Image (tube, rainbow, N blue to C red; front, side, top):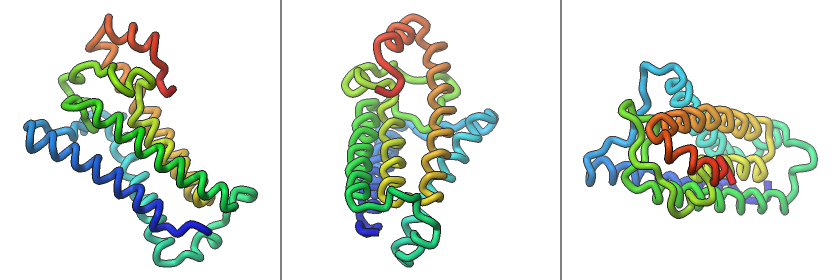
Amino acid sequence: MHIPPILPAAIFLAYASLFVGRSLWLWRARGINPYVFQAADSLQRFVERGFRAVLALFVGYVTLLLAWPEAESRLGLIPGLDRPEIEWAGVAVQIVGAVIAGTGQVAMRTSWRIGIPAGGPGELVTHGIFRISRNPTFLGMLAQMAGVLLWSPTALTAALLVLGWTVIQVQVRQEEAALSRSFPQAWPAYAGRVRRWV
């Protein structure tokens, strides 16, 4: 490992601060609880647990490397990817991912939610970064996970990306189905001109 784990940890903490800060702002300043996972919905339970597992995997892995840098080589590096230029590319992808995810979250304003509201989504957000991607926050999160894999290419970080991709795919499809029900005319028009990712 050429780049210390403190740098990816700092990138994650910067994004996590925005994530938590925006959520608290919605809750305290606007009286909106953004945490709306529905316990009765089995797919929502899967997504909620999946996101928690991704978070625990990342935090646990970086904490392990901070305490024991040799753990990376003990976990088995993916051949061909353990090079300084790939590590730096991974850090750059993490930064870009954090910016994209944060921009998407801010652009949603008071429509930002974690999960799918039982009463349906708020307004259909199509401005700003949502003119380029229908799911910029999830796109940014995936980029951050891909960046972690490039920074530290182990079986564990590969598993982190696969799990994150799976959970996000399930959530995106559920959200798009909810948007389609809530906006039967506006959603197909928007989805027809803007791609799911980029």
